[in-house]
Length: 57
Length: 66
Length: 319
Image 1 (tube, rainbow over the protein chains, first blue to last red):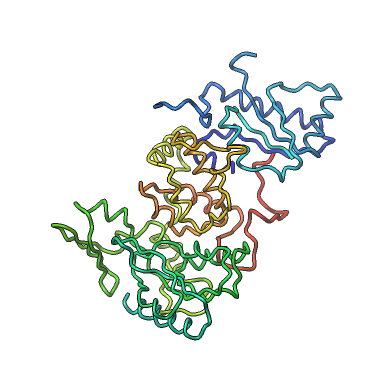
Image 2 (cartoon, helix red, strand yellow):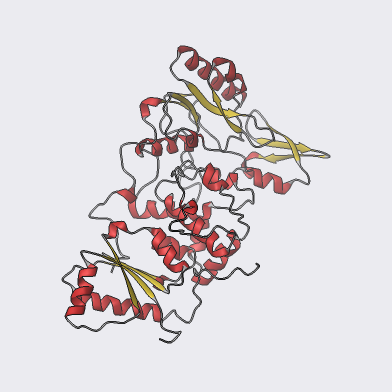
């Protein structure tokens, strides 16, 4: 999935996968931070997959 | 919240990461507030449709965790 | 090619007369050139309409899904692989099928030929040796080297001979080897691009799409009772020709075929706009081969990679 999304031109930082057990709250917080940072680095760019208003009505 | 704050849709497994998120909450840990949690019964419920639907409706990123 | 046709007719006639099958699915000449259509022969009288040449590009495995009858089916390499996929996915049982295997040397690309001639094509003739193709229409007649006008997937095909069959109609043709053809050159070219270039590449590729779903309907893998594009509760994807929705449709359709696609080219062939839909499925085929060592439809006793779990599956992408 990630491979094909990136193949179609979405940036690598937009889709994340992880494994966290219910006892690993610290890992959760850590990964949450990583994910946010990766996304923040991209926010300046447009959201490519977002549905926009049709250009021609 | 300013326009610049990204929205991250996270799909968390009820039994794993959702538990971890809950534990993080009761332990009063701090983590970024950009994460919007959707609880799924199991990561096996995850479908590529969900990811595309999230992006389509304006998510900045998607995070799947089991 | 006429020997192929005769042999197909002969075998079909025999099968139907002996009552071994209830019908035989094969190809018949279409109403326009280069568009052979599937034909279902229910009695021995029909079999004389069967034909075989370089225009039999559609995938007949598409027509056996969930059938209850005993079926004889004409199958080239890719059809046979798709039949194997059907058998693995319980869409038909092996006992129901009598597979008439056809060693194949590739199908002619109608988009390529149409682009090279000045007018409407009225006839297409292949020479017996299978070397050249002559097309003619009002005021023109041109001969092409057959190798130049093959469908791209056929030119890159590694499995020209049927993988499962009950009877072969001719001797096996030589297979191409990994050394002769580079299957994934086009995919690698895209892989090397930056995200923005890739985005632009696919934007351009899919810009002609009119959402007719011909690719979906021609595909033997697309047998879901309700396709995700037709679902409205929830509605996953818009129904118009909006670029985002087109992209989501093609993305998800390709992804549904991951690990199942045999690169038969039916989607590309059926596309009225000539979009190379294979740009997506080929990438997934490459990933399956690299990550799981898997090629679809080569065996009927192994589950496809996306519905099995192995402890040694590669999972670098998981944090």
